[in-house]
Length: 83
Image (cartoon, rainbow, N blue to C red; front, side, top):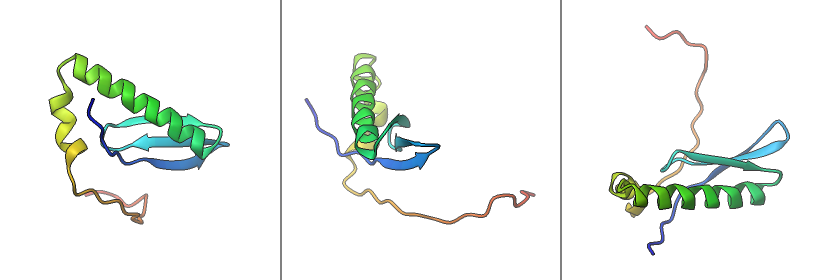
């Protein structure tokens, strides 16, 4: 079985911790950051198992196997009109 290194983002939202994997678009939550990460790992594994079963793993494999991954924090201003 292949092992992938995925990115996880965790934040607190209304008393629970939300976790998201941007490579897969999979999210989960938990009462603690650790629980949110554990639940995200399970969700990602289920997603990948299903993608493999459906023959769709090749569609996400490039994002999963890239040796060059970067994360950053950016600030944006909401409310600007788009014209």
